[in-house]
Amino acid sequence: MTEARPARLSAAELIDLVLDEGSWHSWDTPPDRSGVSPAYAEALAAAFDASGADESVLTGEGLMKGRRVAVLMGEFGFLAGSIGRASADRLVAAITRATAEGLPLLAGPVSGGTRMQEGTPAFVQMVRITEAVAAHKAAGLPYLVYLRHPTTGGVMASWGSLGHVTVAEPGALVGFLGPRVYEALYGKPFPPGVQTSENLYAHGIVDAVMPPSEIAGILDRALTILLAPRHGIRPVPDPVPLTPLPEVETWDAVLRSRRPDRPGVRRLLKYAASDVIPLNGTGQGERDPGLLLALVRFGEAPCVFLGQDRRGQTDEHPMGPEALREAQRGMRLASELGLPLVTVIDTRGAALSAEAEEGGLAGEIARCLHELVTLSAPTLCLMLGEGNGGGALAFLPADRVIAAQHAWLSPLPPEGASAIVHRDLDHAPEMARAQQVRALDLRDRGIVDRIVAEHPDAADEPEEFCRRVGAVLEHELAALLDSGPGSPADRARRYA
Image 1 (tube, one colour):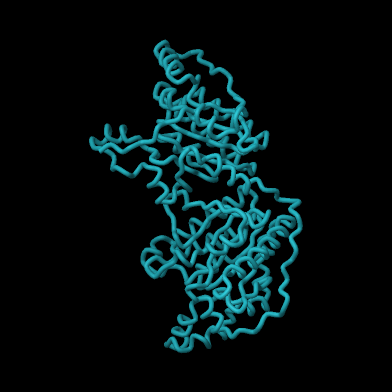
Image 2: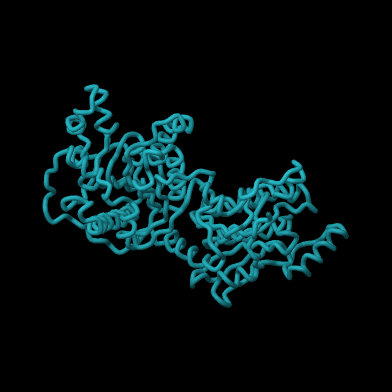
């Protein structure tokens, strides 16, 4: 049975849908057709008559909800959206201009790939287009992509797959090798349901699937965070606790952190964040429900948010190496965009399994530590609950570290430490005390900078607790935006 595909909007129709009425201004000049063969010239003329467009991409600028943006929009009606030398020149010129003028770039590719009439000289243009996108991103400017039906071949393998945020059209054919080519080469149909937006979302390759009518809203919200001011944010008062923190015995704190009703990152964002744009997966075929990756604002302060999600970590699916690779995507985003990075520790521990070993878990922990220590953006770590082992340590290095009162950090669960030292589980409370795992102990050693009080337990006052944490995050992020990132040596010095 043939899969249902969405009705295809023309480039002009999608531009009219996404941009403010009357704001579109084309950057395009007539393409140079000198030297083309008579047969190719005839095909180009027929494509113009069929589509009303003079090439397979339209470029220009306009306003999206009042914000000036640059646009690259594919036109499938012109030779199936294929990319030749003229369309590549147009793309490179537009990307370069957007970079020079400091504009965010919105791309809406739709294409069967490289233009067969031009062969390899057209095929290699993808290198030029990719370099232009890389230069735009290196300038710290947002690049947002909306994958339309269909997007395949060299377009998907270049400017279609480089977005800071990537959204896809529902039901769209999205992939590398076109199914018609696959069937011709291999004599059988391509497996159904693979090259679809929904399947790519399930595998962490795109961040969302939504219809064209919703694109302006989600992209505008993303740009509100990505383009938020880095300096001059109004000072946020320091939410200093009114009373000294009561002493809570170490094992009691551990047990409180394990309460199933203790608020995690999702309730924290619900009550404390002013805006949240969830992202999805590594972009390379992996996602892990134990990690929440998002663009977030606390008050006016923007950040990339990496939260270990206690709800997504189960006995059947503990946090695996995929989560750490997804976290590294967030770290790259923060570095590329100059946004502060917030990491949240709340984990019973990384997966202990053959699959985790074969997935390179230890190496991913090391790479997270490396990225966080050297990151060229301000960093803030929140210890929210349990902090078991290397999976927790991978999120710890930061310019500032704050902790919930009953949060803790340990090389192993206290029960595991007891099993090693005493060959039983009964000495877990004693081991927790001896190993100084509490946030209060870590503050005394200079590892944690400040504690957020629990009255008496976050699970008993989830909304109030989350709002307190949010106020501290807003205060700390505003200060970090002014001070900028610390050096690797500064970040490591607190552990000396």
